Image (cartoon, rainbow, N blue to C red; front, side, top):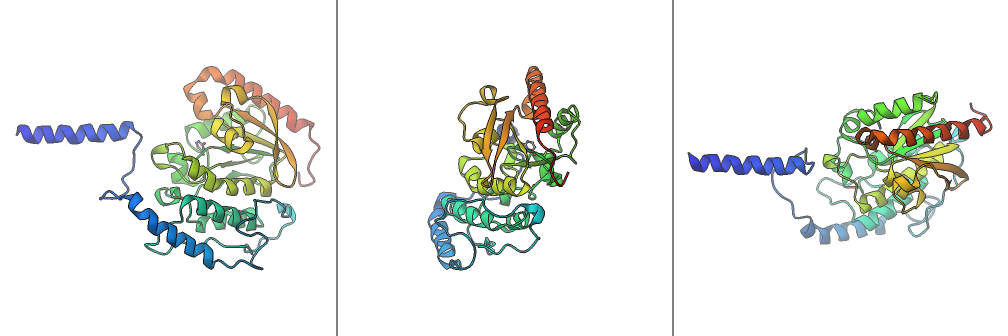
Length: 304
Ligand code: URA
């Protein structure tokens, strides 16, 4: 009896430990030694890259830096991407290691002529391990033709269920912040740096972020907003290349080069931070007013 009790205690302690650590999903019955897999992964990924059509298959090569020169989405017809396509992993095939996955991501993202094509590419892209633990891709919400684009860090649980960014508690607060300056989701386009939910809402690793970065950059380029808003420090650091924390970086206009033009970008507090730290709302309100004035000062777009 006592041994049963102590076994229960051990299991309960173990469970409590994992819950506190943010684990809310069981991925398999048996532990997997990822290190033991890495050699096999490297050779599979090298073979994938070696067999990809290179010449004439698309505008970019494996060694080319990400360039952002395709036409504006308003005039780009929706067609299948003509460049290198991410090859979906075969059943049992290991995903490419992160550095090769980042190369694949750059090539794939650059080849997407429209946002819809980019979404389709992401649906097929197997290079980011988060895809395999998330329920679905969380690509974007709102109006892709909006002048304002907001980029968060990564989807949470609610977003993973619904397939749309910022639909949970922080999304509701974001909606209220936008409403305060007369904007709703028909006048804003919303996405995340990482489009798949990290397990247990953990922070995406630098490698996961690096793999997803070409896609969000291309998404911004194709959406072609007039003003970019980074929600939270990780978004600001990733997109604006700054090292400052959000408290220092927020409220300062910076330049963001989409690849086809330079647009004003502002970092502000992430709504999830504001839910935990309501004192920050005063500063966030200032940022919203700055966004409102900046949008008002811009000339109307031809598609407005
Ligand atoms: N936090 C984010 O950064 N993005 C979401 O979509 C939801 C919460």
